[in-house]
Image (cartoon, rainbow, N blue to C red):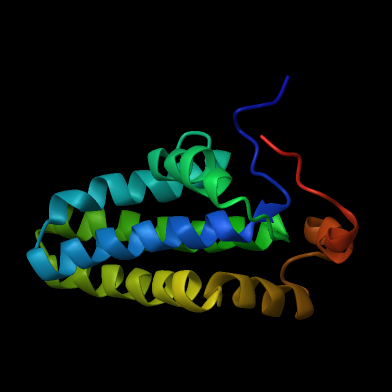
Length: 163
């Protein structure tokens, strides 16, 4: 039996990019229309994806069960860097929730959301994952041990099971 609290490895980059596109839409609604209530589902989504991948994330479920299968494209990429990137998103969005709802600072929340918008846009439009690049840098400098991503070195010899 598969554990709910398991992040997939590898990850379908197409799904990751589509989820990032959903994040772009949500962050734009927060910044342009001032819909700060969206900070709560935005933060929840990031936290859920860090803990379980798409399993407990509504956006992740829509993408992995609805959209990506219809596209029929699978581009496997290592899971640990994507999880790290989701962790950065979780930190920024939870910080935005605290700033807005805890301290009443819309401007601080908006700055944090703008950072998420930039990263999510780079991921969704250009397949450039800032969190993944930071993960690689931290691995090269020894901050993240190599055994955290041993499987990343052999990612091209594996396949993603179809669901």
